[in-house]
Image (cartoon, rainbow, N blue to C red; front, side):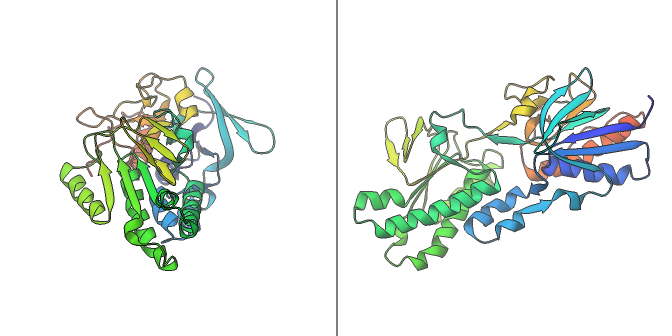
Length: 350
């Protein structure tokens, strides 16, 4: 193969940035390798901190870090990925200003993440989401607005609605969010002497048999007890049928709520789902244990948009602690392929 080896990484989240940083380290003496990172924004969000940013425990700016400052030798391009041509091994990316980029690659890493699954429940557009910095800021301001409305409301029903918070989805995001919101409420109530703590209603709905299906059942049970001690009503095996503006409809009941947040699962980014490689039933890129595409060996994927099988055959969960380690292993695997060696499977037990 003539010319330099071109590695293109798509996505500036945990997976993409971790992969590039490890590639820079292990290929630092390889002048024949070019590394390019393409991201829609020039910063990456430390998503586990969004909960504290929403509650005010941290400033919002602490949740974001500039990507360029994290890189040493890789080229960074701020652009939105438009398409991937597997035959030509070419990525088309569109910048906010200026002409599009046509990037040729020898090894392609897809780390484009995921978005909230708004196709699962009818009327999901009527709910708020919690995935980005903007979501955290909007939710915080919305909650303060509901407190203000409740403080001024003379009607008991209206007041109850303002002080009712419904979280749909009892996974890690939903559980951590509702827990942080109870702490937020306890903190701001001192500014609203006319609102009693027992007037606040936090309700968590999970369609599955228990909350936190991603972790050990004993830990999940402990989390449930902690939430209940904070006044959270947990409803498991309870599917939300539809979401209206200010109302959640269940099988046989409906609940008026001033705040409705949808955290019921994620779907891979539209661009990752459109890459013409093999995908699983959920739209994630189907890879083997080394994170290499099952249908196209020049393509790799990790993080939320990939189905990476563990030793038991089940895909690893979409968690930051997994993605960071996936990035390290994926970089080593690309190095192995460049050197003519076989890549190694990713294995991690939290």
